[in-house]
Image (cartoon, rainbow, N blue to C red):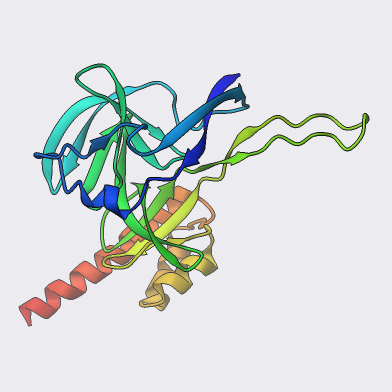
Length: 233
């Protein structure tokens, strides 16, 4: 397909972020040109977007509804793109306390660890509570590969989907997470005996997203009850 990919992204620095604290006097929205992004047209396989079609959605900043607009998520640049009141495509800067909801999903900016470094990014929360399972849509750009000789086929440039699960405890950065009984019990560790019994009774398969969410919500309920008992006593 004919697609567009980013070749330069050199001005997305703290100075740009510092100019935007919300959607008040400063809108929190910037153009590609202002961010120093330039494009080239090439034949690229795949798409940088979760869904190329814009969907009607809303953004919430610091708990207050900021705007309604057509939106889509760029999983390559980790940015929400909107159509502004002038019909132009713009990107919302990544910063804490921003939530965009469209297409049946919420995109929430959260802190996370990436190879030991703290970053901010958009996540789809899959449950609510002290412990949250998260999904991070992500795509990387893979350069074209020329064959070494005539017997090999040409590999075109491609947007490769590398989306994955993350998990986080309230007040802590999200970490990458693999769906498994061992990984989940190690992460939760408290109440391990109760959790193992709950897994057995409910025959949970912790390689399945829905069952992982069931166990996390049970764990969150134990913490909630514990806190309530402490308050009452």
